[in-house]
Image (cartoon, rainbow, N blue to C red; front, side):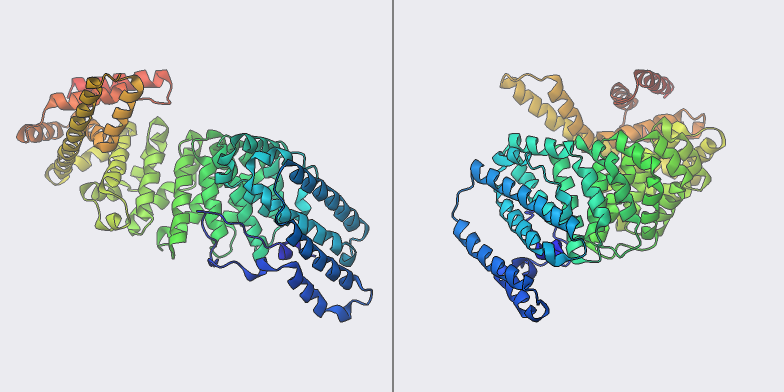
Amino acid sequence: MDVGELLNYQPDRGAKRLRAGDDDDDDPRSKKTGRELARHLEGDDSEDPSGERKRILEKLMDDDEDADDQEGEPVDESLVKKMILTFEKRSYKNQELRIKFPDTPGRFMETELDLNDIIQEMHVIATMPDLYHLLVELNAPLLHIAIAVVDLLQELTDIDTLHESEEGAEVLIDSLLEGQVVALLVQNMERLDEQVKEEADGVYNTLAIIENMAEFRPGLCTEAAQQGLMQWLLKRIKAKIPFDANKLYCSEILAILLQNNDSTRELLGELDGIDVLLQQLSVFKRHNPATAEEQEMMENLFDALCSCLMLAANRDRFLRGEGLQLMNLMLREKKMSRTSALRVLDHGMIGPEGSDNCHKFVDILGLRTIFPLFMKTPKKMRKAGAADKEHEEHVCSIIASCLRNLKAQQRTRLLSKFTENDCEKVDRLMELHFKYLEAVQVADKRIEGEKHDMVKRGEILDDVMEDEFYLRRLDAGLFVLQLLCYIMVEISNSGISQLQQRVHQILNLRGGSVKVVRHIMREYAENIGDGKSEEFKESEQKRIMDLLENF
């Protein structure tokens, strides 16, 4: 008997995404009462000479009446304990009969219906998170009635419900993790056939449970990934089946697992996940996503790739997997993927770990792609929703990374780009410098006003407040300004007098100041190396100060 067919219960997911093809109206199958199932059984009476169906029919009618009687009963600790006890008894009875009569479903159909009834009743516990601790006493092996239990767990772990009673939620999550719930859920998903709607819903609800738990306790992402979830997600994402809501959800869970987590990033790299991501993204090289949902999936995969590139070992895998070539082609093809490809290149080339990628980027003629984007922000990119600032930040960061990392012939090729067409790229550099300098000055003026007001009120400007103000300045354009000043200082120290003269000429012409540039770069040097070793921080600061001396 297919319990999933019986139980196709879809709890209200609040603000969660609707699955493709779902309407606001409930699936009529989920509204089947005992009476309706009974009618269905009644129609097939002729095929049941033993009277088995008749017995089940009578039971269904009785259960329906019992449910009506119990509707008014208050949900308290004793009722929940009673439900748990009933669940365990019925679960063991069902298992016993399944083992005894594996080839005769009619012999255990009645216990299956009993089990269905109690699980449906237990959904009421989802409204009482302070009673969750009682569920820890649930010893029955749950997953043979998998889809029903997944439905129940999905409602129990709904994030709004969890936050209603933190204590009860902690107990429930601890118990689930102790029982290696993620490993069990993954094993269950491997058994499900997504061609069957009920089983596809089961996969979707399983992913919702994992998302809810990860949101409530972000620390479990490492454990979840190691319990087979990462492997299953990569396998599901690369499966050759049409795009659907489950594939979108998988991409979202993958991006969540990789956020600020070097362990999961390393695991993905070891499982050849970089290749999987590049293969899936290569579809969008020449074609735009067909729907808004497919576009969301594409962005999730790009987010996952950017997260992975924070780990040095994955930069090498990205290089070997020809990720640079793919991103470079995306920039040239001018499709929706272009903006995110720029972001990936930035993540892959930044810092000393990006040195190999920077050299390869020049070898595959990447400078021919990046400098036209530096000279002008394409209108198509604006339409795709990327602000000028974001575009200019990534382009400047890529050029700054190249100036930092390139050696020998590749560095010469980069510097010669700045001398082309009567130093037009230096002109553009200075134009952007004054644009962002003005934006930062406006932000500084506003922040100074706020500081003045705080002092007047007798409030203390501690380090936390100062950090917050600095972050606001970075967001207002200081970060891009720092990159632009770094490029100015680097090309002025290149030994090509033409470049240094042009920079100083435009600074003087527009009332700019070398002092201002030096101040910006000193502030940049002071804040460098967040998350890096002290040794790296000191050597980088010394390098920048040496550049400034000759500016």
